[in-house]
Image 1 (cartoon, rainbow, N blue to C red):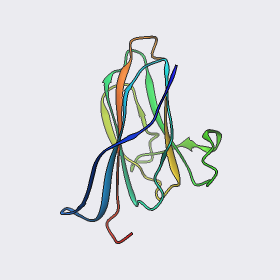
Image 2 (image 1 turned 90 degrees about the horizontal axis):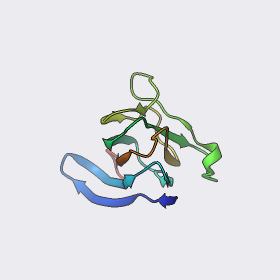
Image 3 (image 1 turned 120 degrees about the horizontal axis):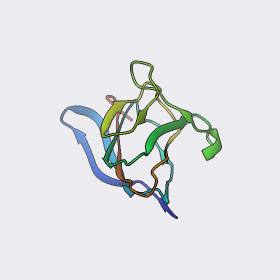
Length: 128
């Protein structure tokens, strides 16, 4: 079992978003892996994407306002329609709750066949 930390894959500012934007990736999460949390404080907008082979896996996105950032303090997040952010196949959803202190992707039920890349886009439309 490996802890999979998010890595910044793109950092941009200006252009479409006059503030700042970041894209983080948790690469190739399998049923034996545990994604670690990502600090997101200061960003107004969060978009989460999961792509890959899911097998029987379900991917969720959880978040917290607690500065301790304990995994136990992260609760299920919803999309703009009020539905839980949950994927059993490739998908992308904008997070309704923001700003947050941190987010934590979780997964279950993969059964050994999952290989999923997780992405989190963060952006702010104003000055930081």
